[in-house]
Length: 444
View (cartoon, rainbow, N blue to C red):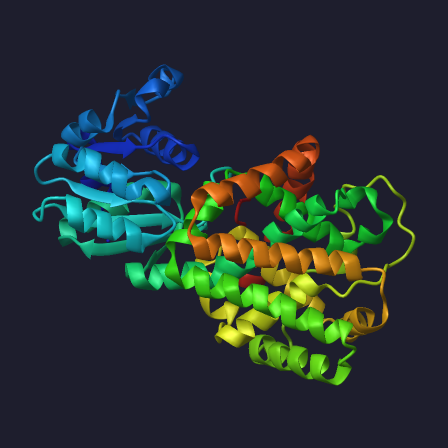
């Protein structure tokens, strides 16, 4: 329950909020809380202490000092490091404090809190389902009352109300399952696109066959992912057990659909893809309005090459997303309240391909009869299987190495891609808000 303004004013005067980890999201929280009038302190690695000297909140040298001083401690660190950091600073936690975290995988986070925090401390975790460069208004914000009194939960919820986000109440198990359902497969798809282009030594915006509305969306989203830090995606993929199954299924879907194409098993391919369409999109109302169209997406091209008409494309990457959802029994619309901005666009692109009359049939025919994309599709299948292997090994080093190499390949274009992508995402999310009848959401 969000408290009355007078009660929040009392909390602001008497409570200190501590942030351990001043990465992009930690800074977002610390700055917004401070601007809203809360007493905020925070820390990062000690060697970074001077870097934050100009921040509008108190910066301390380490998590021991933050934990000792704060009535609410929020750990804002990478999922791979949460246990190590909590173990280090938990003994210094102030008596009676509330502790939470904002990692993308709550199972590992809650396990660390239960193992290292004293049993008399309350645990309330949260997760803002968007990136740091975002207007938080209207975005989903998950709250997890794991082990807490009503007073402790009210403190956390009242604090977070300054973000103007849409609060969603889940258990940590529900959170991890839903975040895997809405993010694991789609991240795998667009990460694999980047690796495939990299392995083929190909900048897609310089190649005529990658021109077109759907291609623009693929390129912009893939480069947007590679403009972020690797741990944003590695934490979800490696730490969340539900994500492992889904990323493996995506690699299998890519392989099996491609095998049907090159064996010219058209009837089997069509049966499988149309069954997936029915499973994922079959319950949409007849008057359902498509979020995207080719004319809209055509506006957001990175290419300087004049378009020469639509090029044939199997859209294997998008076919495999929907096939994976079908195989796993996932209906993405069931989790739309917990969807990130990028997920809504992923969903819009696949919805456009599968629900535009004649478009799905056309891309299946291209996959079966055209050879111009076979090499690209083969590279894509190899990339999807590579990501699946890295995740199954649980190796953050391998994940980082593969991600950063591809990131560096695209680095000369990432600035322009982000600018174009921002414009595309802003326009698309305005359409989302209009269709859903809510406020216009920000970018991710």
